[in-house]
Amino acid sequence: MRLRGVKMLPIKFDLQLRKESDMEGLVRKITPLCLIFLLLLSSSGLASSPKETKRVLLLYSEEKADPAHELTDQGIRAVFRSNQMFNVLLYTEYLDLTRFSGPGYTHAVAEYLRRKYAATKIDVIISVYPAALDFLMGEGVNVFSGVPVVVCEILRSSAENLDRSPWRRFTTGVILGDNIAGLLDSVFRLKPGTKRVALVAGTSGNDARSEMIFRNALKPYAGKIELIDLAKLPMQEILARVGSLPPDTVVLYSTLFRDGTGRSFVPREALSLVSRAANAPVFGHYEPQLGFGIVGGQLVSFELQGRESAALALRIMGGESPASIPFAGEQASINAYDWRELERWGISEGVLPPGSILKFKPPSLWEDHWPVILGGIFFMVIEALLIVSLFVNFRKIKLSDATVRKAKNDYRELAGRLLTAQETERRRLARELHDDLSQRLAALAIEAGFLERDSPSISEAAAARVQEIREGLVNLSGIVHDISRHLHPSILEDLGLADAIRSECDGLARREPIEVIFESRDCPPRIPLSISLCLYRVTQESLRNVVKHARANKVHVSLTGGKEMIQLLIKDNGRGFDPAHVPDERGLGLISMRERVRLILGEMIISSQPGQGTVIEIKAPLKEVAEGLDVGPEERL
Image (cartoon, rainbow, N blue to C red):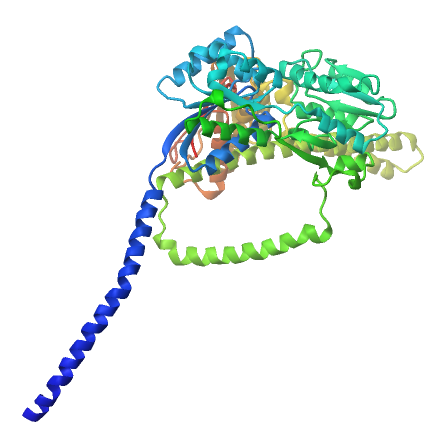
C-alpha cells in the first residue's frame, strides 16, 4: 500500500501542472475575445443612444383628398423615416384654401393654429403649394414667427420674389418644375405631325399658376403651332370643344379645380371627363394625372418634390441657415406613359425615350399567374407555420387592452363597411326588380289581358284560365314591387321617415294579429337620408323581432323630433329577454342595429326582462358629422 502511494504522488502532481497550464492557455485565448466583445457592446450602446427630437409642421394648401398632396406626403415621410440624425415628430394641417377663402376664414384658421401650437415648439415648417406660403406670409406671420420654412411646389417666379424679400433669410424651398419643353418634346416625338394645341385650364388660383407655366412654354412655338384656347370655359363647353377638334391636334391639360361657371372639380376627375370626350390625345405635366387620361411624358413627380423638401428640412435642423441653401426641385420629374392611352391613339412603344416607365400594361398569361401560384404556396406554408405556432402557444398568449381595442375598432369599421355595402346591394337589386322584372311582369299581364279580350272564340274554361293567369301575373307583379320596396324603401325619399315607418307599421298590422300604434311628434320635414335609413332599418328589424321572438299582441312605435335630436321608441308587451344573454338567432340582428346607430353617432338603449316586454330607444343627432381641417394627433415616425 505504501509503495503504491509513493508511485502515485508524481502522477497526481504532473496532472495538476497540466491542468494549470491548460487553464493559462485558455485564459490567454479568451481574453482577446472578451475585449472585442466589450468593444462591440460599447459601440452598440453608443449607436443606440437616443436621437434628438425635432418637430416639423406640414402645412398643405388643399384638402386631404388632393392626390398631389398625398404623393408629396409619401415622399416627405419616406425621407424622415429613413433619416439617422433626428427623431422627427410630424404635425399635419390641411388648410383647404381653394374651397374656403376670404379674410374671415384665414383669420379663423390662423387663430386656431395659434391656440393649438401655443405650447409646441415647431423646428421647421414645410408649406406645400403657393397658397400655404401666402397664408404664412399673411395671417400666419404672427403664429409661427421666426420658424424656418421650406416652401414646396412653388413657381419659379415665387422663388425669385422670395430671393429679393426679407423672408429669404429663413426660407428655402423646392421649385415646381416648369420645364414644359420636356413635355412638348414628348408630344412631338409621339405625334410628329402635330399642328394645333388645345389648352385646357380652370379658373382657381392653382389653375392660373399652372396655366401660366404652359403659356410661357408655348411662346417659342408661336407661328408654328396654332393655339386653341379652352381655358376658363364651362365644363360642358370644354367637353363639346375637345370632342370636335380638327385633325393633327393634341390637348394640353393644365389643371381644373374650378371651371368658368365656378363649379368645383377634383382635377383628376375633370381630366377623366376631358379625356373621355376628346377626339385627340391628352397630355399633362403632373404625375398624379397619369392613369386618368393623359398619354404621359416628362412629368413632375410630387413624391420626389416631397423627398427634396424633407431633405432641405433635415439640413436646416442640422444647423444650416435657410438663406444659404439654394432652391431645388427642378429635376424632380419622371418619364412615364400610360400603356392604355398609347393603345387608344395608336402610338407605338418603340418611339418612347429610353428608360421610360410604362404603366398600366396588362401582364402576359405567365406573368399574370406565376406570382399567384408561388404566393399561394408561400402563404400556405406561412399559414401552416402560424397554425402550428398558435396551437403550441395558444395558452401563453394574452391579449393586451390595446389589442382588444384595436380588434373592436377593426370590427366596427368592417361592420360599417358591410352595412354600407349591404344597402348598396339592396338598392341595386331593388332597382333591377323594379325596372326589369316588374316591368316584364306588367307587360305579360297586359298581353294576357289582350288575349282575354281579343279571343272571344275560346272556350269558357280557357278564358277563365287566361283570366286566372292574368290575375296571377298582376299579383306576382305586386309581390315583386313589395320586395323591391322592402329592399330599398323609396318611400323614405318620396314621403319622409315618418310616413315610411307608418307604412311599415300598417303593413305589420295587416299581416299579423298584432295591434300596432304609431305616433309622430314634431318630426322635422327634412332629415338626412343616412339617419332616416338607419331608423327605418332599425324599425324593420325591431318589428321583425316582435313577430319572430316576442310573441306580443301590442306594439307602440313613436317618433319624436327636436331641434338637434330625433328619438325613436319601440315598445312591445311580449315575453322579453335578458340583454346579457341574447340567443344567437337574435344576437346578429341586435348587433346590426347597434352598428347602424353607431354609424350615425347615435345611442341605442335596450330595456327588457323576461316576461315584461321590451323597450328599444334610439337617439340620434340631426346633423351629419362636420367636415373641417384634418388636424389629427401628432404622428411619431
